[in-house]
Image (cartoon, rainbow, N blue to C red; front, side, top):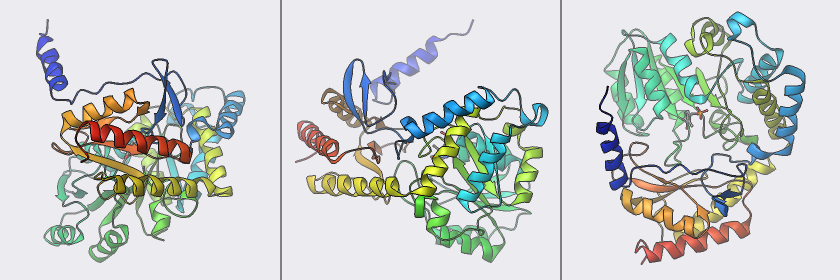
Amino acid sequence: MFDWKVLSDELEELKKTGLYTNIRTLESPQGEWLTISGKKVLNLCSNNYLGFADDQRLKKAAMEAIEKWGVGPGAVRTIAGTLSIHEETEKALADFKGAEAAMLVQSGFNANQAVIPPLFSKEDVIFSDELNHASIIDGCRLSGAQIIRWNHLDLDDLENKIKTNSARRRLIVTDGVFSMDGDVAPLDGIVKLGEKYGVMVMVDDAHGEGVLGPHGKGIVAQFKLEGKIDIDIGTMSKAFGVVGGYVAGNKVLIDYLKQKARPFLFSSAPTPPDVGAVLAAVQVLAQSDDLVKKLWDNSKYFKDHMKSIGFDIGHSQTPITPVMLYDAQVASNFSKKLFEEGIFAQSIGYPTVQKGKARIRVMISAVHTKKSLDFALEKFEKVGKTLGVLL
Ligand SMILES: *Cc1c(COP(=O)(O)O)cnc(C)c1O
């Protein structure tokens, strides 16, 4: 038998260095306040930007979808056929993104596995921002293409790397919003380079949808680049509050992927309640952008106050607020102390962020009240002083 002690020793080492993640068990839905171990705590962790994970309208739509379509898709769509609610959702998501067509898969993670490997192979080159999400990195690796990393957000570096390369097929790929720092890709500049050198452009808008652009339509709408992006990856798991992923783009791309993408061919589609709820989310966003505005108001309020208290909150341009503590052990202690004070804000260290860049990532949501944000600010200040992070 395998000697599992090697692995348990490794886990012990993670615990010693503050890099072991203690996964909390929730006794309540994702929302502004949570119940954890019988204790009421303020939720500053989730990607549930607009509160959709527990929204009455989405819950109702999910239940109606179950009544009409049942709970499961039966098999992969190429074999068992596709439910019309999948097609309806794909059309709604494509419209939402200003794209011709879209294809659903099981998660945002899978969307990257679905799109990169069928389009790129050994002879090809992918230019990837050095801080791209793990699912993009894995999609690139799986394709077998040569991966050239460019310095984070650095268009000059990107251009130099494109210039000195002449592969058969080339791709520039970037996160829209970088999930750990909250900074935004210079998508207009990237598109210009794509046009200048004839390179395909792909953006993963997981943290931009529901957040950036009018009515939360995402980074492409924010930069007014509809029709100029080759591939737009989306997730239903963040602002949409559900779970699932999709690829949006032109009709040829989507038609091709439905024949070639392995997560589409070999794994079943999202369930009827998932897509039913997402349809409702798209409708809510189309009707009103009040929630998006509230999200930004809340973020500004929290970030301004954190800065004046004296915290280093990086250079986020979005509601993602990294409270930089650098040392993994300090970040882990900070999170534990906050929890004792009634705040759920998880510390994040390597490998999710680079070594020496540990932090607490605060996720602001439209469902936070000013009163709750004040409570959070008070507790952050208190713990910051106790741990000597603040003077
Ligand atoms: C969160 C995230 C994903 C994964 O999305 P899931 O739907 O949770 O699988 C993919 N890409 C980026 C950039 C992300 O931030």
